[in-house]
Length: 177
Length: 207
Image 1 (cartoon, one colour):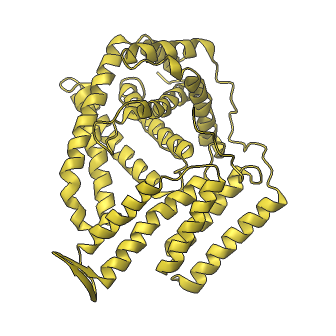
Image 2 (cartoon, helix red, strand yellow; image 1 turned 180 degrees about the vertical axis):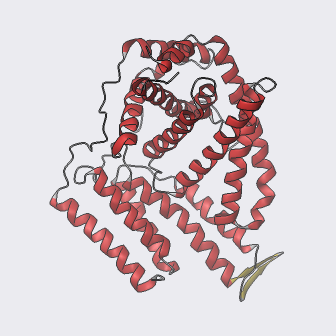
Image 3 (cartoon, chains in turn cyan, purple; image 1 turned 45 degrees about the horizontal axis):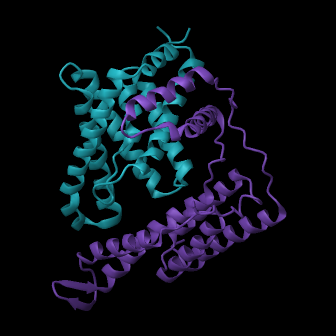
């Protein structure tokens, strides 16, 4: 069934706004390790995998990256490019895992794969363009942090999917009248 | 008491789109700059502009970033040996390369911080979508005090249900820029900024 464009855009914008909102909320959560980022902004993307078409999931990710760039003022900096590259890699992997492995892999697994893809790309970019080859030594630490954050966000996403009334309404809204 | 928000002096004189386009010109010139002293000077000027834009700079964060990038680059020796610090050999080429890269990062972030404002509207369909995004984001932010960490999922769900029932996205469908006009002072500012950065790259850069 073809989804009406207005309904699609409204649903994508609302999910994008939720990404920014979670990104803001993350500041309220105490960090166990400095530089640790939980990545709560990825939660709506995990949830959208079972609602949106792959093209709309990609549009949501683009919207999230641009929105964060505008709110944080990083739209014209390397941070934006790193964020865009990491998010793109992450969503590509999550879409593939969810499409072909949703029978065996929960949102926790999808979240872990996504976080690993994002961190791998960002580490590669920082080694190539900023720190040099010596920085590979810190790669295992960042990948470990990625696994932990992907696991936690996936856990919250599973819980959200099981309990949320809003998610059901969101599906109807996306499909349109 | 929450810290008082600094006023954005630039916003009063500049249309967000003109400021953004000026930022793009400055970024290109900054990236082509090959003189270390000029690059450090540019970073200091950009830092002042960030403060004028009403934003805060985490100095410690950027100092750690510049230092760590420089140290990592020192691990690959290039050129004349300047100093030996135990196992680390400080070479002229590696030090210069490290500092060039190290100062590039805060420079780019500072340009972005003063040149990109949340009221920047992008053109076309994507611009309309971004406008809707901020419409919903503002509504969500209004309800942020209702979020409880102990019942995170339920409190977020309740907030979203209320939002879904109470709002219709009556936001701009296109990406038209908000009505902030650029003043004479604003035009003077962007002209000086662009010309100074172009001149710096012509005189000291790699053009």
